[in-house]
Image (tube, one colour):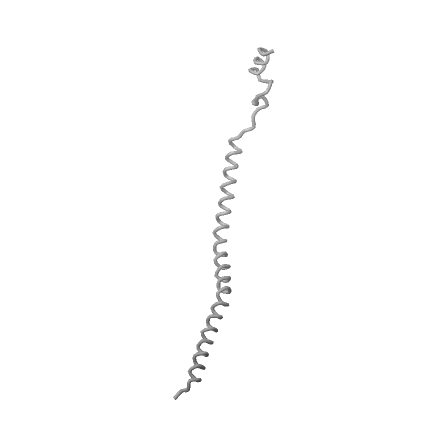
Length: 94
């Protein structure tokens, strides 16, 4: 037959084992989280790198198309006094 003190000892041992298990889980979660987080970021970085390269190529393509469409204007293409229309307007005003 077990004594009362023996029952209390087993109860405290069980609480101790539960506490050890909880501490193990509590200490292991940040380590596991860091490992899984770094792994996930590594996998995502591969796709982000590909998306970044695609975005750079797309931007370069748009820049080339814009640069080709935009041609340099001749010297008298701006609104200046060397145009014959502007000279006539200035003569009428004076």
